[in-house]
Image 1 (cartoon, rainbow, N blue to C red):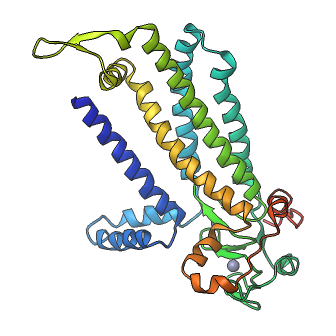
Image 2 (cartoon, rainbow, N blue to C red):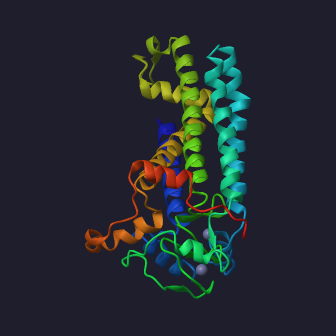
Length: 326
Ligand SMILES: [Zn+2]
Ligand SMILES: [Zn+2]
């Protein structure tokens, strides 16, 4: 079962890599993040000098590196799907609406990906500062009145935060997302939410079609009732591990793509659910992080929830006009 070890090693590296990347790209201030930064400081003593500069330019300044990487991953997955899986599915007469569903999902996703990249997240400047300040009350726990942003030279509205990557204050700041090379704030959180859900649905629909195709291959070849001769010369009935090995060796790229999609579904599904919970309870990721460290003060904090319907309205109809001040 050498291939299984190889496959498990590949999946483990992929999971560790994606998790490490998520923690780094979200720039969270968790204990793991701090540990990674400490490890980075130690590594910088032995690594070449250009590496920290490249890291800084990737994560701490606005650039399109991850937007391009995102598009490359989309192209690779859909090229594999269109090149191999689609042809087999058509031959096996799998339902056409089912096999073309991923293309509809990715079309919706790419539109909202563009909107996330291009939309104003809610940049606060001297012109609109007064109207943003009136939007939310200061809770005097997480947000205090009369607090100035030393960089933008403005009064910070409640729920806003200065983004060091974009170099400006953002209304109802959620987080800075390297994948869309933009901040996620009060004016584009609706696009980000739909983008994330449609990306999850794209991964789910692709994985579902691939699984249906592999299942059909197994059923049509009567693999479940087959037998094989083991190295000792005994006849053995095939089991699940044998079938996975057989599929892996027959369709290696398709099985790898399925493994990659499976991990994506878990990560994206988890993150989409978390963001949906934050939206429905009218919290931002920034507030959620801040609250974690101040649990004692939470009892006296009312929060900004307006009830379920009010919170949904606030996400999809932000209470301020979209102004192109960027
Ligand atoms: Zn600022
Ligand atoms: Zn930003």
